[in-house]
Image (cartoon, rainbow, N blue to C red):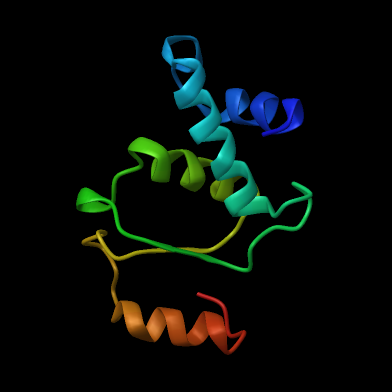
Length: 98
């Protein structure tokens, strides 16, 4: 985990000062998951599941980063998906967007 990833993670975490050093590394890891190994190559989209579609835990960290970088997210836990999550995923894979 680089100092760049740790600094980026700190920007997106609402309670960074309360995180242990290990938790900080886990949250920094999410930066790589969303923005690639160089922290400059955003994912095309994010597929996840969180309880009730909420931004919590490590996945919540990834979702905050994705929102900032305008990366589409399909959260299978979200109750407000108007269409089937599989339809949403198909559209993203085919490059049709959300």
